[in-house]
Length: 188
Image (cartoon, rainbow, N blue to C red; front, side, top):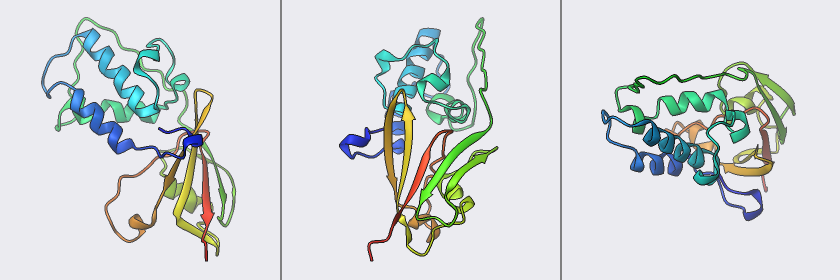
């Protein structure tokens, strides 16, 4: 993720590629220290934090992650292999606590019904905009800003959602609780 002040964009695809290149081959056993290091790198790539600064005892929400991120991590093919979940921990206890399955997102800018929306399922940025009535007569899906607060810093990802409406395959971007989605006005 990139800091809003430097006008960079989040790049979840690059983050996944980075983690995938450093993970052991599918089917390879990992020790607990190796798994911890893999998790630190995965969280660092997902949140834009330094892997060295990630405290393994911190709750996911304090790291800027949601329960959806845990599901994404568990299904990451760089860890599990192409066939699905294949993680096996022996003589180890793993506890997963889901904070909440409700996501609250603010949708604003050039939409029909700006406001706060609550979702009880995984929701993409496009779905959140559609829940807000879609764009108004001036709105463009070519420049949608998703703003996320992570560890007290705001990060902005600027998205062009037009390709998905044109039938092009795209990777969905999911909203997290607390996100702000702003639809820009068209320049003409």
